[in-house]
Image 1 (cartoon, rainbow, N blue to C red):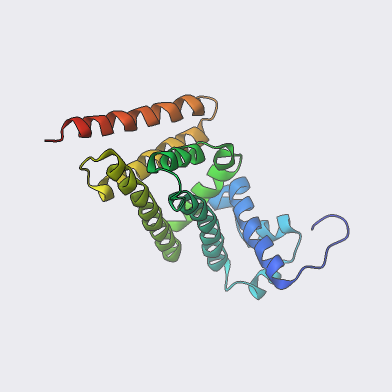
Image 2: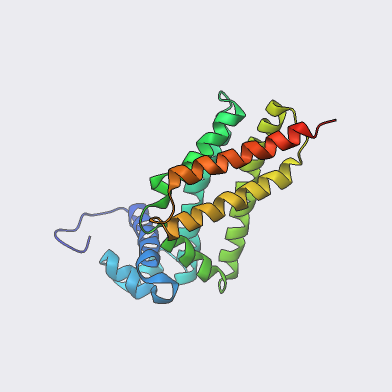
Length: 207
C-alpha cells in the first residue's frame, strides 16, 4: 500500500491489513520496538487511522493474536476432526504439522514471542493465551483418547494430552530458534519413536 497507486479497500480489508501489520511488526521489531507508529508506517497509513478500527494499541494486539491463534487452532482441529482416519494417522499428521515449513517459516517465532512478551503487561492478552492453550489441549485430548482406544491401553487422556502438547510446543520452539541445529525430519521421527516406546510400555504393563 505504501508504494504506487493505492487500491481502494473496504473497511474489513483495511482492518485485516492492520492485524497483519501488527504481526509483521512484532516479527521485525519485537515487542519493545513495536508501536502504533511502526505498524502504520509499514502499512503506509496515518497513525490516526488506527483509532477508527480499534480502541487502542492493546486492542489491536489482542485481536491480532486471537486471529493468529484461530488460524492455528483451525488447522489442529481439522486434523482432530478427520475421523475417517485412524487416531494414529491423525496424530502423525499433527506431528507433521508441527514440523512443517509453514509453521517454522521466518517471522513466526518472532511474532509468537512478541505476543507472549506483551501478554506479561496486557492482562486480556494473557487470558487469550490461556484460552488458546485450553482449546489446544481439548483437540489433543480428542486425538489421544482415540489412540488410547485403538491401542487398548489405560492412560489418563487429559494428562497425556497436556504433556504431549507441552512437549511438541517445546520442540517446535527450539526448532524455530535454531533451525540449522535441528534436523526437523530426524527430530520428528525421534519424537514419534518416543511416543511408540511410551505406549508400548503402557501396553506391557496391562494386567
